[in-house]
Length: 562
Image (cartoon, rainbow, N blue to C red):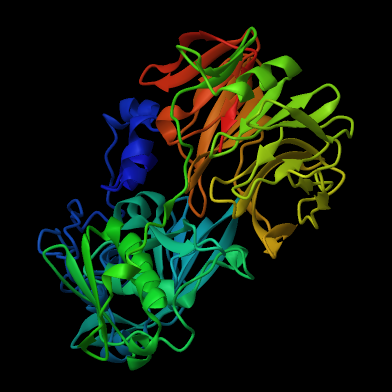
């Protein structure tokens, strides 16, 4: 159910639906959501570019209902954000309706819960939760459940019970969350403004989603992406003006008058961030105004900045003495011979196809476009290397996850001040295609950890990692991890005779698992359709509707493409 609920019109959603959710589609055939309250019927929520006219809304409070019934139906009514939670506010007194802020947070409960009468006109509601969404749409998931107790007070208005005091925010079951909230990547830039970098948020479906996206965009990136990991075009003195006007898939976004005084390039970048961030709200055309006046954009300032992905979707393999794109083994020129000659165990090709980093028994080599090879890191026990968008080769010994070096093509190693736990075993280290984030899969004494951290640079040189964002990985023994697309990673773990692949939206919840056997390497590429596995006997597998299937390509290396 998780993958279907997230399905969106954008290319990110389409790609994820075709592969990582292939197994989930089979399971979804008989899966339907069940409303939390027996007295309320809620139809499917249909998004239509901010127009909520096709949404079946919850019912208001029934007459002569008990406190418990009012409370239970209020929780269900809060699944609809239509007209600023208009129906949910019908369950409140007028004063409470004015003071209650439903956008403050959303607690996602994992188990059924019932309110408890604690005397007088008060109810106590204890929920088991491990996930929540804050006012800016940031999703947080803990490794284990925790209990939170919320108190509600009631009074009679015209002989009918109404809620008079309540905490800000809403409480949703997992099913209701997946049906009433959707995933919206906000877009920022890498520090050099070459690539767009997504920052996934979750907002309730409905007519106010465009306003929430714009407000969150101006508030800046999530905490783990701050401090210089990504950049925004919006100057600090630019504020939101009037509400976003959405009509026929077009949006007019108003800002304070200071937006008009920004330079041409800055305004063009501001517009690009808006266009990309609003596309998943079914908005295809965006215009900007400053205090109601149109903001102009000279044609010379049209931007070509895009999200980063591998350049070729075909498997890049070493088969015998040939290194190239299968199944025809298309050569990369002299670099193919250079990689093959090293007889390595892992390889990574940069985005331009001009350099490859190769792991051998002697260490990690850099193979140039001429085919010449240079030893960059001779430390023992290195794992598969990664290359970032600026050409730095990232290496680390398996025995010490904190001992990361980023080495330039001229052989100068730059030790990285790491926030990854030291004295832990690391099985994979992968830089995102845009060069802003690092994915690490480690084994610690307390279990495996799948970590994403922002990369901080000085004058373009990587120097340190930002605060780690830990994803809720399973307890399986870690084997490998990879980037799937700009918002998604996948992890390969082993549990006895079975290997499991699980995808993770960065800033979201895990996808559904798929299983295989004897996997030793997991490699992503352009999107989820190019996610592949290498087995211990040299088979290359791809995920199909029936599971992981051998594509009849034999290889000793399945290489990563940046």
